[in-house]
Length: 549
Image (cartoon, rainbow, N blue to C red; front, side, top):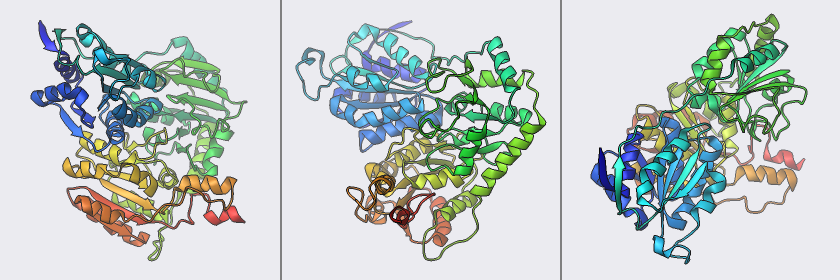
């Protein structure tokens, strides 16, 4: 059956077909028709953020938490520019995301109309596809294609530009089925070659990345690791690919990773990489893995294979399908593999153990993480910004359940709070806690009002040392004592939160943190806990004074 509907109504119908239940946005006059159709339909929640950057972070995190495309909308060049940070995050994190951007009227294009920008050129380098819709008769075709591209292969963001005068025009709309994600199987001969090389290993290592999470292959990964006794190293900010208390888990390669954990990767002679692009951070600036290693690389995107390290065997396949094939293969675990895994697991446990040693007069970040571990339920979702504070989380917090960590591999500041809001909206039954430094928190602090208005009970932890700590660390390393641009004012975040109507506490010692966290969990509304940190404790591995010796 065909209907004669406006472009705006067709977009809403396509979103419903794709099971989209939320759009994150800052409203704009260029897409009022679309907003009105969302209002009239009533089945899609329009979440108005206080800044397009916050809205795009929310959409990106919602994509991770809901396992379907996050959707954001903004107006013309100004809204698009603010929103770009979340699009870049989705691109680097391989998160499915569809962005609708209002554009100037078609008759004004090319005249430097009000807020005009060439959106296709602007977003092309950070998206899988960008397109400006100019023909109402192609709405169903092109918007459907946007959702298909966002979810297919290596997922990512897609941007659709919508001229304001187009949205009210009508054309024929025919109902189509929603997109079903394709999961390609590996070639049998490639799996056989991989198994043959794997059998030559003395110190094999699995490096597991986001592709495992995207294909819901965590249980398969665990079974394969158990069957073979091969240790598993998580790639940057993909901690939850396997329970961290599992005997095969040997840590995570990221920023500030402890040396003993990195030694595991350096000592491996055969690496089975699954669903990872070997990013700069995972590879420690492309230096972690030796040229002598044998590499077996599995990824759904053929362009990822060989981009960083040329594989001895490259397999283009969905992670779950590849792991299923490996489980059914003739891999024969060796006794030395079990001893190697035990050795590296013990090395991980030794450096990540946290003593129960609360401090009544100062903050030790290890104790903060220990309390989080002891108090939060195992299915609590953790989100975080970029910043040195996150290295304590990454090194010491144990993720036991799949899909309980949401962090930007792009290293975007300001991500933690809006991501937590989106995660709580997607999975309201779970506790959601965000971690931010004072620098990053100020970049999206206005989204506290969104959490309050939408009644989203997230817990926001703010680690305040009154500086851009990560940059200060690098500054002191390269130019000791030449401090410029990295010192910040001492913001009263508790007062700021309370001005928005959000309950807040300021903690100056880690002994007080546990009770503050428990109080925040008991209430059914947003909460902020500000933790005052010693600027001297600049990172997991260094004190500030170390750079002046």
